[in-house]
Length: 294
Image (tube, rainbow, N blue to C red; front, side, top):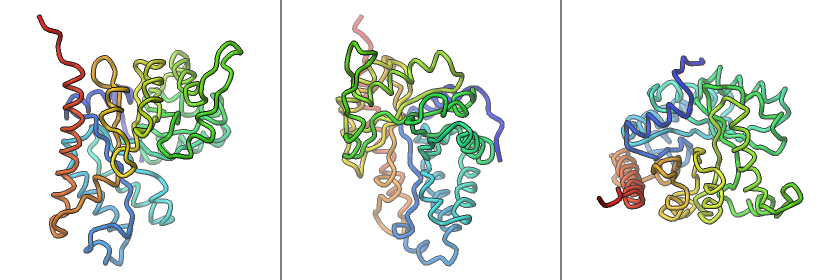
């Protein structure tokens, strides 16, 4: 199912940001019990999932810079769920990058299979990965110059502190949290690998995000935790925007796709919430990057 791609993931993302004037990414995470009533009653659940995702995409394609389906929501339905994921990928316009949120991480021989599935079989533009096994394990992703590899640094969940906040020696001379050490290592990898490299840092931790941005001034950062997880949108934007007012992929999933007004016109509420978020993001971007007075 692989697609013919032009340029790098970073270039395609930048063009989508420019075209739609947006840093908003919508997570396509369909939960059967939260689908609109007419879809919950369907005897074809995978078909209902595809119909739901397609409606969200059609309503928001001019408001986003990317979409991000989470693999777990499709694996839960077995082979039919994977077919729904593939159909969803085909339904998204080619000019909009799509990130598969799978947090892959294993030895290199196994990651070869993951990379082949994500990039060649399913045609995704980028994937999220877990760095715990180290650089050599991620090589199958890192060598793909037309794709993106987005590495977990500081995740949005409370339990991220268990390991990611550990203070570790950095070359014996100084100390960094594990999350910041990962970010600095990924920054170093950009000189050795052709893939577009990025990081995951949660909007629930704007202080840590500011530290990561200080060490990685230009890396794209996927920002989960906005909306249902209660992340600090404005604080995270101020902490994570690059000098050009870009550099963040602000993900919202449940707060957008399950926005509800009139049940019969549920998709209008989805578009309204996506539009509101894009406008809120752009307001901070504009305030932070006003041209200097003449």
